[in-house]
Image (cartoon, rainbow, N blue to C red; front, side, top):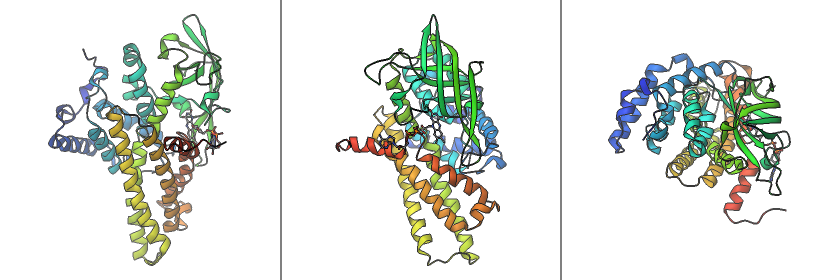
Length: 407
Ligand SMILES: Cc1cc2nc3c(=O)[nH]c(=O)nc-3n(C[C@H](O)[C@H](O)[C@H](O)COP(=O)(O)OP(=O)(O)OC[C@H]3O[C@@H](n4cnc5c(N)ncnc54)[C@H](O)[C@@H]3O)c2cc1C
């Protein structure tokens, strides 16, 4: 029996009706999301900042995320057993592509929806699904990810934040860092050490922690783009009921790995697909600058850079589609996810170098589009770090190719 978790009252009739997987129905589905966006996305919320780090975007991201969630678009691909429509990978991609094409803000909960929701659906209990998924979808509750610690980033197994089981509570003490949106979050999916073990990957537990309690102290950290996006989180005996543990205590590692592979591909899909939209915007600016005589058409940095950026945006799109396809088929996406993460993040940094060349002093001056490009550009420095650094992804790829481990 399927349990309807999400109130689909606001879902568009077209989204609900397009249940067949033939191409005609896929086209109808795409047109339905397109016209829904036309009706529901205010023009001044479109294409604001490619970097999506501006603090003033948070409210728009939350409000638009809520609209999308209530209309059923964020959960179209979820199984019907948890309130989704069980839509195909093609439709999931269609939703993302239409959002990017319209310059829509990324939903505030896109990380938790892309990373934690699939993990909870796979490993959590029906009670946990009922309790947490609906508010995540409708953005009534904002979520953050509490994995990294000062001494445990790339080496996540070094996590030392303690989780002690006391009666029917898990009591958590330690520190998390780089926790995105912790200052806005109502819940955190957190990885803690509940047992000391010879094996470093054993004894970790994944739990859901309510953030609004005295024992949780959140201190925002200002990033290079000048915004408070990530935070330090100090935990001094913070509590969560044992019923909020996902899976078995001590078995958190495999769930964290599943979550991170989702983060590198499906979780970053909307952001990765933006590369193409950003390229199109850049091409328009380059055309204008050429017409006004500010750029030369025999400039090799411009011409070579444009061709390279165009090809990279196409390849990134293909990689993201492949990851989503494999994921939908229930296949392991670890290697494709690592490849997509490295290729997208490095391509984005290169594209921003090209943007600086095209925009000249406008890139930093804040003259119209310039300031947004600059902010987005500095934020691309973070893209080769979060979700697993480029070096770590290259290690993953080297292993998948059977290359020997470095010393
Ligand atoms: C914008 C942003 C948002 C983030 N949001 C979150 C969040 O919401 N939740 C969360 O839990 N974390 C978050 N993080 C943290 C992120 O996951 C870590 O920064 C990342 O995993 C790297 O860990 P670290 O910073 O400790 O660097 P380290 O692990 O100390 O790495 C330092 C350098 O050494 C390299 N290195 C380390 N080990 C190896 C190795 N074995 N082989 C080769 N090179 C190696 C790394 O590639 C890197 O260049 C965020 C980070 C950023 C930048």
